[in-house]
Image (spheres, rainbow, N blue to C red):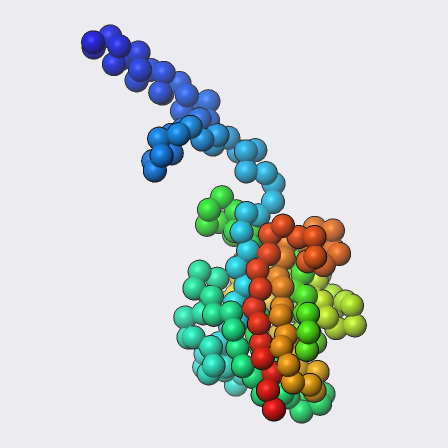
Length: 196
């Protein structure tokens, strides 16, 4: 009996060394080797940033809105033409291996009423870039923010009404092909109702 227990223990340790483990919930084998999860992100989270304490503070959004507790719906008054008044600060994260942040190319894409009013460069003078595309309907970023300031390891954009009332759905996605979110497998959405 002791011999069988020792053999079983050695077998379990050997499997652990090969990158195979047991799921604590089901007891089934899982492949835990580095390549088993692929090279891309596993999950996206998009949220409306309340900009608490800033001149752009959005009181319609939960104060704890962030990637892990996203507030994804907002109602905003239509802004005067050409202004950034009432703009909506949309932030997002990509996650890999459960909770770790993922740095890679993304798009924020508007379907419906509204335009991108800001698509900030993720690292200032560094190698990352940002571009507004598709007549102001898409913000493309080559990576997450790395500035040494609040908001690092997240992606940022701002949207605004285009003078009309109605709904805007903003899709955030991992976009390695720089072709928008339609074919993206890892994505999330927020929605804004622009009212008069």
